[in-house]
Image (cartoon, rainbow, N blue to C red; front, side, top):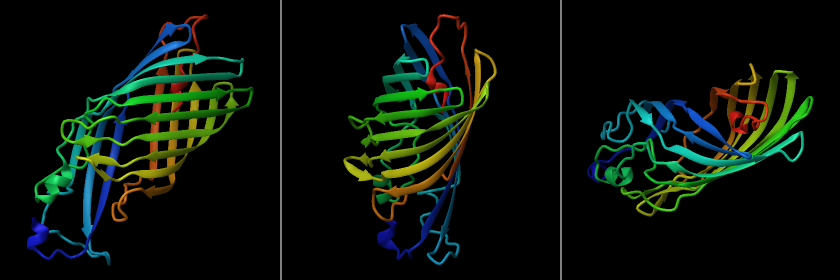
Length: 279
């Protein structure tokens, strides 16, 4: 190990990721309030790294780029297949729930911590998990002439390790907030969002984990009964790592997203468009 052979001074890793995701999702109505959806996200991640001493001076570590490095990662990430059921208890309220699984399409990596201990080049940012993880989601939308409200809950379980010894984190997220109809075709939504994510494990050893609080602003514009456009901005308000005190999780300080929901052949008697159209 390089650390055992050389006296390496204390230094800091400043990691930056510019992250772009395209998330095409196909949803089909099955009748009676039932829907099925399939999402296949594609990621582009531009990574950069800077090393400094604790007093902020530039530092060049002797282990070179075997740990972090300037690079570009791209490709399919894990997909998601879901079965949904929606109902309208009243003219103002739509509720729904879904169950499904992640689909391990994303590229996986060998244990980066074991490779780091050997001084070998390794990759911490894998695109997938290599496992099928059960997921469940629930949503409620209250709408009115002007004011409304939104609530969603999403959970992901991990049941086993992949073939390389990796087990993804378990997570639960909650999002809630009021909505306001600015014009007949334009609605805005503000939410508070919480995420709790357990540590991931490599060969049974836990790493990372985080609790995050964010706030979001969403605009939804109905172009026609078939087409809905949306835009969202989300900012991190608070974050706490659950792992080692030196293992600080990356912070997504600000996230922008845009999307479109297109309904094909929707008739008068069909179910309303899925609330998934709202981020």
